[in-house]
Amino acid sequence: MAVKLESVSAEAFAPFGSVIEFPKDFEDIFYIVETDPQNPWRVAVFRYRNKEIQTIECHPTSKETFEPLEGVTVLLVAEHDTPDDFRAFILDKPICLKKGVWHQTLSLTDEAVVKITENLEVESVFHELANPVSVYLM
Image (cartoon, rainbow, N blue to C red; front, side, top):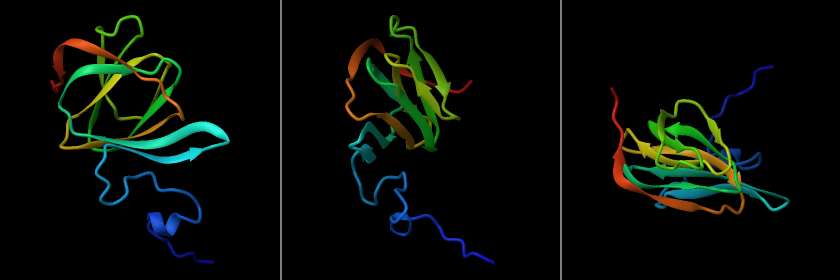
């Protein structure tokens, strides 16, 4: 039996689930794609254009995934006790952050998008860096 192949679109896939993308003409930078009231988690997409940061954040009670979807992302991370001692990674694979890890994203392209999965309710703590941080390729 031959089966017709279809392109994934929000409309075509609606009977089966959700497409993990921003809706057309959605202007905000964070869009929650899915939640489940029976299980306290959410799936979202995060869009950014920043080339420089001044703050990093952590979530003391939630792990968090970052899964690259579009563009080139740099993920800055630091252990909980040393927020100013960060490392920078090109996000070329999906990752899951431990609870309390300091993090921030920067885009090496005009715009980048990552998929995020995390607790439904997320506590965010912010740390102001002494100087702005930007990244570059060597």
